[in-house]
Image (cartoon, rainbow, N blue to C red; front, side):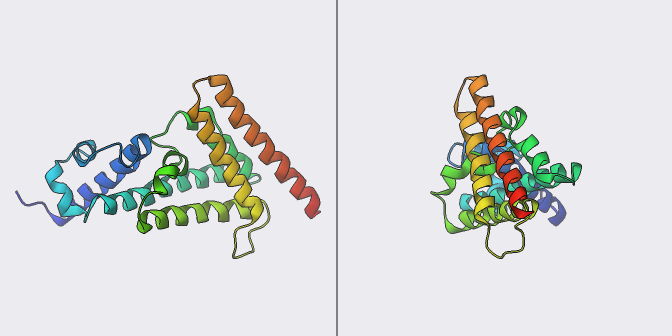
Length: 198
């Protein structure tokens, strides 16, 4: 039975959405095409009608995962426009975010996998990371430069590293301590920077 163009595009988007979540949970090599397609409610035979290769899907799913996380950053920032950095820290460095790898930050979930991927996948991550840095730089008063600030890079590195470490341990107390310590350091750095700018 022939599928309409509209249905084919809906199927394609369903595969990208499912893959963006499943890759974050299992890694790029931790799931095969059959299970990816099953996760989207489709058969494996439909894959090659929609994507050139698994790498093509990996790049598109990576973009989608980063878009979803950026949307969460924007929603958090909008909830506290007086202090968007604090709002993002509140969700990003939380035990809730720690416990949702399928829907959480793809940089944390897939960072080491990306290093072994092709240029298209790396480009997707580079673009997403660039947007994170732009947002952070704007919130700390360094958003006028074409180059990301060292302070924004340090904040993002601290956030990603803390979430990664919090997921790497079984001890819930230690996990929470990593998240709290990172948030405290970022707040202290941002506070100091504001004082220096006055």
